[in-house]
Image: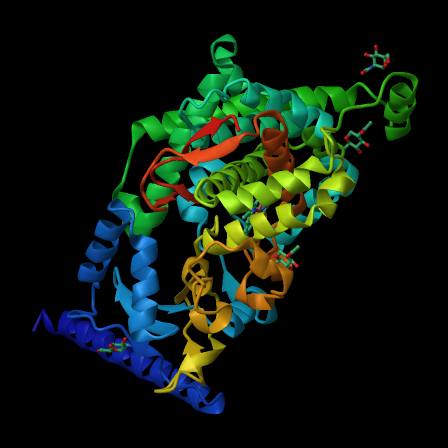
Length: 505
Ligand code: HEM
Ligand SMILES: *[C@@H]1O[C@H](CO)[C@@H](O)[C@H](O)[C@H]1NC(C)=O
Ligand SMILES: *[C@@H]1O[C@H](CO)[C@@H](O)[C@H](O)[C@H]1NC(C)=O
Ligand SMILES: *[C@@H]1O[C@H](CO)[C@@H](O)[C@H](O)[C@H]1NC(C)=O
Ligand SMILES: CC(=O)N[C@H]1CO[C@H](CO)[C@@H](O)[C@@H]1O
């Protein structure tokens, strides 16, 4: 008798769960009917509760640097949209431009990023980890600092490009450009953000700067690990990661203090302007601009780290992937040299760079074939609908449940032969003479969260490419017989690096 209340509670609990389950199901079924939704095609999976075999298959492919080809193949075998189960959750994956437009733009408010858990320990609450009102606030804070004249300071960039060029042999010796590009973008990003570069390309002299680059690289790779683990990450601890985060945040904090002190030495903005018009042209320092808007140290540190994360590797990856392709396409390299020759040896200005059509085609084609953000995902914050992908023909809308993840691989989308032609897998900059892609190719994303640094990145990459052509020139030879394979972090570059030689003609 004493046990019966417990039994009663247990039974009541189970019944309650079943009723809740049933009412949720009825709710979703109604919603589906209202919108004419049909289910997406399921991936063939032996077991769909845990989805452990799928997780294992993907981990194995990632380890062997072929997760991206695996995604291309899956879409070829199972269509442009399918669903599957992984780690106990059902997800949807799509490469339909209409769906991507719905996720990023039309139904933007129905989704969140769902990456704060993984990235939070390093990045805090900056733009790159925030959603909703907090994201809107970050975006409004950062946006004004990305205007034209602030990102077009090519003199500052030139300093670092010269450091890079000093490390590129012109006598045909093999050099791996990829690690050099990562050092270049670390140097230029810290210059732009802090007003002081860590000068990692100068190596031995700047020990503190190099420690920062090393710790940042390490923390970033850990963050990617945490991201991949999904909900399992709560069981993953790494003391070295905690220490790296502390180091990085303290390092950036030092610059934040400086910017705040600088701000405090002036009574007003007019003061700064008066002072600077007397002296030489004031260098633009991103952090100082932000410090005019807020004096909260935590906020400033978070935002700066978000931008470093968003802007540094991505630009290095674009440069690496581009040179990987250039080294294998001598005719493209020749045409690029001809366009650069029109400058007659002068350094290009911001506007001149924008006018260089063939250079633009090359960078566009690089971002199409090797999109730096190769895959991305969102999580639905409420039940919502994707316009296509359901039913046997894949043309009906699909219902997305609350908390369901939706992922999309631009890498696979950009290789769709029905959209880009039978030569979709080939590197052909000329296709951009006529290509107007819309939502079929959005390497900088789209909608309200479109990349803030697009112009900055294209300016930096374009300028670096032109300067290499001008200063090194010659014939560009590949010194590596491998085809491109992925090296995937938050951004994607080349697994085998970019080993090339510049040979005099
Ligand atoms: C080739 C270089 C780059 C590529 C391909 C790229 C691509 C992207 C993509 C796809 C997103 C959307 C991510 C998402 O919402 O999940 C993004 C966001 C962002 N990017 Fe870039 N990016 C590049 C360079 C840069 C640079 C140089 C900066 C800054 C200096 C930058 C700053 C940002 C910021 C702040 C966001 C977040 C915007 C927001 O959430 O509102 N990016 N970028
Ligand atoms: C309801 O329960 C069934 C199996 O008992 C399960 O497959 C389904 O996912 C549950 N639905 C919801 C909405 O919880
Ligand atoms: C104001 O300008 C002068 C000379 O141009 C410079 O020496 C001084 O350091 C500046 N003041 C501040 C606070 O930056
Ligand atoms: C480069 O690609 C973007 C889309 O990613 C497109 O809007 C733009 O027109 C392209 N530019 C050139 C010069 O082809
Ligand atoms: C001169 C200057 O930029 N002063 C700014 C310092 O920061 C506060 C807010 O934190 C601004 O209100 C000032 O304009």
